[in-house]
Image 1 (cartoon, rainbow, N blue to C red):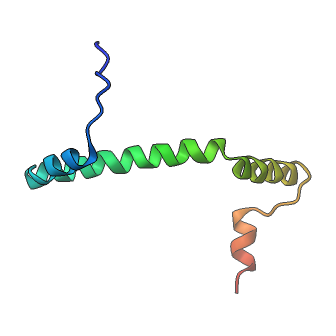
Image 2 (image 1 turned 120 degrees about the vertical axis):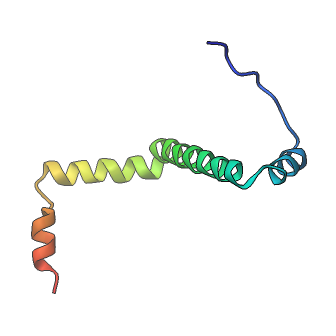
Length: 78
């Protein structure tokens, strides 16, 4: 399989092209963008020092037994 060419398209050209698409193709573009954004956000989160610190804190608390199960949490709610 060939690698896709690396093209740089000016943003105004891209938006003008998107405006010309039929509605169903615009919906497909939105689906792709949502997937790509979610993936990028996940990758960014995973490399975030703040996230890593929170994750390590949660792991430490879990190992120390400092947690409640979801069932315990639900039973404590009024």
